[in-house]
Image (tube, rainbow, N blue to C red):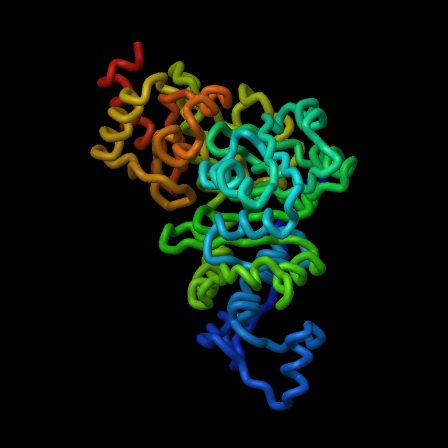
Length: 402
């Protein structure tokens, strides 16, 4: 396994300058670009010219700076940034399938992704089978000759199951399918491409940007794949147009360089809370606890010294209990009752009624999602012990601790 890859150092080694030598790359506030010769424009349209920019739906210099940085961080040859995480996910999936094809997807996945796979793709005659991708035998049984994609999240939202990326890659190869991995929960911690994934997607809205001030996504892969995505005649992102604003690209690029520091602090705080929850008898799930079923698998795939991530869950049994606890935690300053994750403040929500609400309750039950599940995206608190003490007091007052 690749234990020596250091995405943070790789990123620090990347040198990018503005057009006048600025330490921050310039923001190219332009939708279209001029050419000195008409033939150069023609060649650029046909993809035969390197280093020329045509139109910002295709490439923009600011977006390319961010894309190049993401590729370095992921260990891929290239990347392309999008206007949202969902546009990255849907574009990557649509690019791989035609009518009559089959996708094998993780049953436990972000609600928006589930809705796209379950409710939207069938209109194009693309069939999707949902399985527990942690059970490799179930994946193998569900594969078909026309399976074009195995889709999974590195750490599943919200139940925190861990995908065995090297083994899923082997299974994908048996039918010539692509392995697409959403790594939103674990940037820098796990590098799916280097473990065998063909394509890595992100919601950069979350940890990568870290400020919840914009919506953005990314697709990372080899150069031929990224070029095929932006082909002017048949490239999915070129024709669907989910372009990211260049000013936002510039902002995210600057935030990217603090990602390693933030992920370590998110992870340290989440580890502290998870251990304390376990000590007081709360049903908690966190990839950094030896009690997590895939704890050893996670460690075997993780890059060293970046922690176990900032997301954990606790199960309080009933939705009304979870809601009462979350409301009180917000009142007492623990964090915000809000969806999303990767923010510098702690965010918490009842997954079954929020980010997974697109998933029918019967399937939630099949997944093993409790109606009282609270997903915590643990923030960058400087005094996490005090944060726990507040949560502990709330749990006591609500009669949850005995």
